[in-house]
Image (cartoon, rainbow, N blue to C red; front, side, top):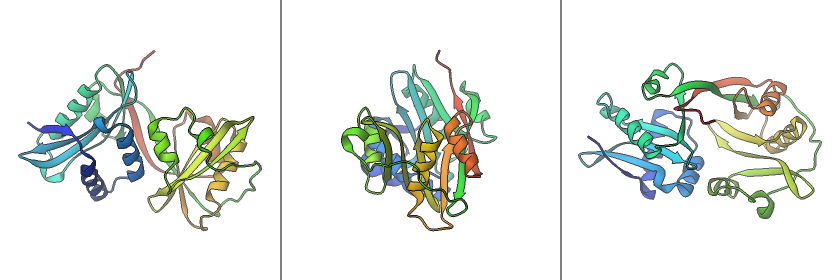
Length: 252
């Protein structure tokens, strides 16, 4: 049986070391900001006083939680420790609708715990210079009063990080769309939050204008995110990778 404890700040380096060894597309900034916002939702597992795995079971509210970054070190696998960690995360989020992303064709690992597949979370790739478009909107830099209004502690951590580039479109002193870019894999990741395709396009091309031709840009989306999908199609982006989004229950 594992000794599972709340992970301490200095033990984050253990996570970063081993997700890199696994070759996972995990963003260090994302994990650091999640830890800053939810320090009691990170867990590390010990066996005979040796750290052998970890799991994130983030409780976003009393009704919703997300399980991610579940890993058992290779030399300790096939002993049921992954199942034990997953059960611990599910128990921690008891009463919540729980979401997680599964590697393709590994969904059965979670189905035995009541999770069902609902849609794909797709990572798309674009090469800078393959399409060029003029920016047709006035774009604003980060403004703490506007940009952080109503944001979570996690979002505040992301938006104020010095390695994040942030742009927004405002109307009547209200942000109608915003986007951020950051280092990711062999290039950069862009996240656009917009209900207007023209604004989304302006944000995208403004965010990548300082990058070199040939640089890789990644955008994550589901088929249900209409504006992002239109953006992906306009840019002729190719599908780079895909995960299956699963839920243990759907709240009505």
